[in-house]
Image 1 (cartoon, rainbow, N blue to C red):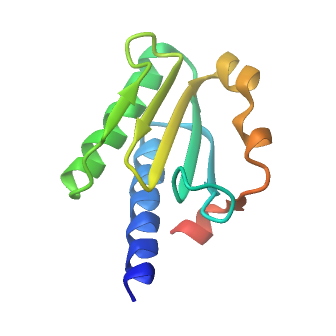
Image 2: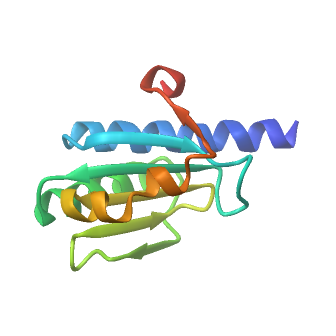
Length: 123
């Protein structure tokens, strides 16, 4: 029962983050369920932006929406540069990249053993 509730919480966090990124015109938003392959988190979300301002705006929106819903961000990395911002919410880690950095780091390839969720799976 407690495990199922934790899974629902993590999925709700991922849904809210996806919506926030989509609202800010995030590019190629990928949601990966990594619960079966890592203890780092249950979900990774990876999204791209066209420039540093958009990347920062996307991160701001995710943090604002999740905090408002009762899921405070534990840590933010890379905000000032605006090239790769990592938002750690515990069960959810959100990566917001510039286009070039996203291609370079290619996190989708690294986490290919996770389960990629469609928008419909999430919403």
